[in-house]
Image (cartoon, rainbow, N blue to C red):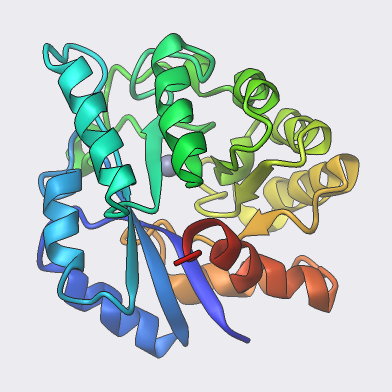
Length: 264
Ligand SMILES: [Zn+2]
């Protein structure tokens, strides 16, 4: 089975070797490096583009900006637009809902959605649980209500040609994420990091399967490891354990990722 990992973070430069080794070990052919303009030192768009440049056949990069307390917000949005137009980035995200105090239907995300729609690249949102333990790199004052996936419906409705990815399937608001996917053909969800607060084998897997069934969205899933936070082999095993059809499993492991991020 061909695998593309759409959810990787490079929090420091040296991680790239570790990521390549993990990809090789787990037969992952390609990956999307998501920018994170908040706490990780090397996770900024500029750094990631520089790192990924050396491995063009392996990686695509999603660019990002910091929103709160950013005096250069308009300029940063303009720069992101240029990167998209120059085809340097293959998506925008992971937009850190909850870590930044804005809902997905805030006007700033409308601006990012417009850039993505114009350049036919996906917009990627962190949703659900937030990581607040500062000792391990979390953000203490993150506010989880902003990470509710339901607000993504506004963007998905108003930009019907824009592909949107709900990271972490909105966990714990999985039914809400599934409803947004059910209603909008242009909304997908990744299956990364679903067991932050609850053990996978008890509540989480059961809720996920119920949500997939409710939203009839088994063909709109994407594999993501959330590297370096979770080991890829464990995450692969979990996706395989969902009992998806062969066709949906192929879409989750590479078909949807190819369509969304690896068009060129
Ligand atoms: Zn995330």
